[in-house]
Length: 88
Image (tube, rainbow, N blue to C red; front, side):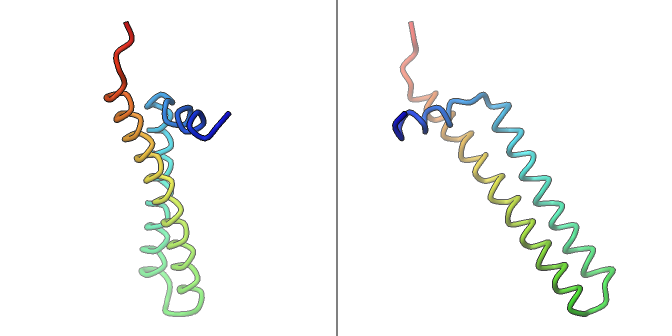
């Protein structure tokens, strides 16, 4: 399977699968934000607070990347479907 076929296979998945990936990324992102908020509100300024905030930032960054990749996958799938000639 060459690169073009693999890309086409990756983009042509049903939107429900891409949306599940987007939801997962969003939940991970917000979990990281909750960790950051909790660390800033509940922990006193210390090394533990800084490490907790760092962990929350890493979790948020991972969730953001997952969600944006899913969003790009959905957009590309819709563009390809729009440009594709109708099959008679």
